[in-house]
Amino acid sequence: MVRTRFAPSPTGYLHIGGARTALFCWAYARRLGGKFILRIEDTDLERSTEASRQAILESMQWLGMDWDEGPIYQMDRLARYREVADTLIREGKAYYCYSSREELDAMREAQRARGDKPRYDGRWRDSTATPPADVKPVIRFKTPSDGDVVFDDLVKGRITVANAELDDLVIMRADGVPTYNFGVVVDDIDMDITHVIRGDDHVNNTPRQINIFNALGAKLPAFAHVPMILGADGERLSKRHGAVSVTQYRDDGYLPEAVLNYLARLGWSHGDEEVFSMQQMVEWFDLEHISKSPARFNPEKLAWLNQQYLKTADDSRLAELARPFLAADGCDPAQGPDLAPVLALLKERVSTVEELADAAVYFYRRLEPNEALRGQHYTAEVRIPLTELRDKLRTVPWTREDINAALKSVVAQHKLKLPKIAMPLRVMVTGEPQTPSIDAVLALIGRDEVVHRMDTQLALFP
Image (cartoon, rainbow, N blue to C red; front, top):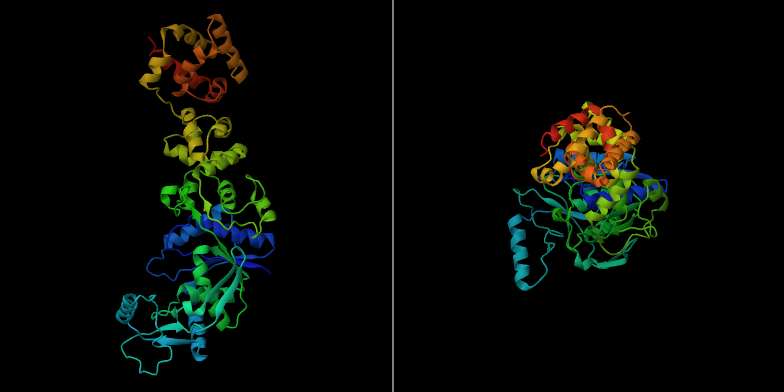
């Protein structure tokens, strides 16, 4: 059975690159009827935080990437890593190293001075010296001194690295906490991981990990290293490119299915398909169609995709998502028209739920038109026609069709063009120069509120 894992470190929030890795791992397992494991690699004690751990779990849940096992925390498995390290020592495949930080710094400085690549020189590898009593040792892995590490990456193809290029890496720190390269190998073995799908910033770690797999007599998983995501300018992705945390996209009013759809298209494709569901992605996903080149993150494309999902989203769901934004803007949707049909009228014009809520404000709170708008639209020529329209609106049946008929009758009676009345009417009632069809807007706002707003604004006409 295929078993994949996503293994973030809780040293920050889950960002776009990590979320895409998680999606590829999740989709591959789902496509092949396998298991998707969530593992939290929390051994960086100085930088790991509870807030980051919680944000990772929240992000995964919001995106809908359900895991079959976990979350599993490395800090709960310290005894297991020590057990495996002790086995490697007994078998002569690892050793204690007593070099102090000062000694190692001096060693690397001397290597640089000679023009050599800075690396551990193996001074304790086969040493018979008496260990210093006042130094807590680390445990180093005995990297094979000759030969090559060769593996067939499912994205990048065959990769070969000479063991002579690798030094004896630390696998257990003096405080008993494993290093990254050791912990992941033990975890992947214990969790029966069959496919390691991760960012290609880990390619250089893979030969070291393969040597540890081999030393433990374990079957190697398949490796697939996914190219990184760049900004639109070709530089490494950062906050200035819009690469904020996944929870920030949630808080800004993006829909999770739109974010997932966009992530899927960052470095993977299925023909020319742009908009597709996660069910479709699971049916289509394979590692063969992951691009070998870095993907480029485009916030405008994400906003466009989110807009496509908003257009077809359930209006009641959008209402629940928009309520917090409206509340933050001083609006109480309970004190106005039903929110769902309001959003249905507006959603074609926006890219996020936040923009949708902003567009709905005038339905729940009176917006005063600014002086420039009043000067442009509040003219003596239209004051009488608008006064007559207000009087008609007091009594007509309150439907969009009847409101439209009243508006057209006033326009015809005064031999005006429709925009001549519709534009100042729009400004009077909404405080905005652009809205959906004004008859639909008035119908939703309600008779009493519309008449009240017109009364107030008519008093400002010359």
